[in-house]
Structure formats: structure tokens, C-alpha cells
Length: 311
Image (cartoon, rainbow, N blue to C red):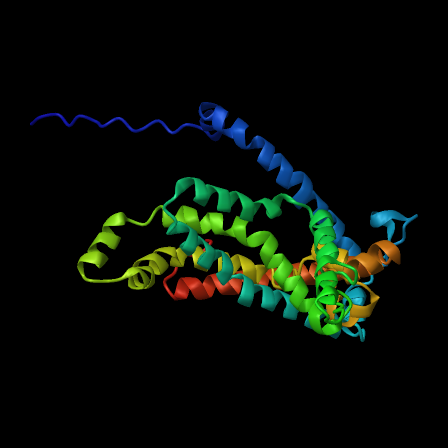
């Protein structure tokens, strides 16, 4: 009877040995890990302020615990429902009107065959993304302000001055439109990258079947972009209570406070100007919890629908 030759078992290397083997890769991602630890995880220690009667001279650790009193004070205030309403309206308008714009722009730009023209349009449209809202808001004020370029043209044409930035009826529209103008070019980059990954043979098969350009977009392009659209939609829903502090802080004023005051600007006023740090922390924690619930819920719905999800 022949002897059975024992198959050597693979040597299981320790975690430290595997890390040392791939040390170059870990060194490359080390700055990213340090960044998130310092700026994302360590600040979470300060969330305990939301459950304390914070005293500046006593410090965070020596301030007495008050439980959920700060949350009850915020949720029962007369101002809070208006803040939530303004935040949800502006964020919803951004998603409804702003979400399709980068997609449509990417579809149009993808059909341009002149290479230099395509690159020029791309550069011009995503350049505003790199401008801070301090600069971009200054441009908006110089165009839409009471003495701005647009009102000057209206007066020269015999019309009347329109206060776009001080009129409660137009302020939200200005916020949404300027936000779209600033970011749609940058958002289109993701769709253009996804378009390059669609198999060209699908378009050839569609043309053989007699499909025109619109039919190709509907039956080939959009299904190919559906996973990317789903992920971006989930991320947008996670930021539903983030209506854009930088933009609104630069553009709003006392005349439009009723329609333009959002949760983030309220946190700025009570936290930094009024020194109510515990109340501001409670509002910020509330917003973060709601955002997390929205992301988890939307991601679960996408998984049940068979779409690609974040995790």
C-alpha cells in the first residue's frame, strides 16, 4: 500500500508580517488614516458637550451632565421647525433640480467630437468648483445685487429694479441656481468617467437594431449609468440636512432670514456668537444622526431593488 504524502499546510503569516510585506502600500495610505483620525474621530469626544451644561472655565470634562435637556430645549423651541423647514426645502430643491443637471450635461458633452472644444467646455464649467464661496458669492452679489450688473441692464432697458437677494420670494431660487452653476461641471466628471466604461459594442448592437441617438441613450447609456446615479443619490440623501452653510452665510441677510435661515447658520449664531456651545453641539449631533439614518435607509432600499449600494 502506497504511503500517503502529506500535503504541506500553507504557512499562516502573522498580521505584523503581512503589514511589513505590504509596508509601501500602508505608508501611502497612512496620511489619509491620520487625517481621518485627527479630524473625524478624535473630535467625536467633544460630542459629550451635547449632554452637559458646558462651562467654559470648568472645561468639557468638569461640566455637569444634564442628559437630554439640551435636545429637549432645541426641539421645543419656536425657531426649530422653521429651521428644519428651510433646510429641507433648500436641500430638496437642490436634489430635484440639481441632481439631473450634471447627468444631462455629461450626456451632451459626451456627444461632442471636437476634442479641443470638449476640453475647453469642461475646463470652463468645472473651474467654479475650485472657487471658495467667498469669491463666488461676491460674483453673484455683483451680478444680482441691487446695484449689480443685471439690475443695471434692467434699468437701462426701462424696467424696474429687482431685489433678488433681499426678496424672500426669490432668495431660495437664487441659492439653488447659483449652487447648481458652481458644481454641475464638477459633478459631470463622475458621469463622464462612467460613460467611458460602457461597452461600445452595446451601441453598435443598438444601431444595428435601428435605434436612433435618443433610443441609444435611453436603452444603453442610462442603464449603464444607473449604478453611479444610485450611489450619488444615496450620498445626496445623506446630506439632506446640509443645505450649504458657506453659500447661505455669504448670501443671506436680515430681510430673508425667514426663508434663508437654516440649521447650520443657526448653529453658527448660537454656538460662536452667543457661546451656547452645548445647544449648538446638540443641534449638530441631531443633524448627524438624521443624516446617518437617511444614508442607511436609502442604501437598504437600493439593495432591495437590486441596485449597487455603498456597502
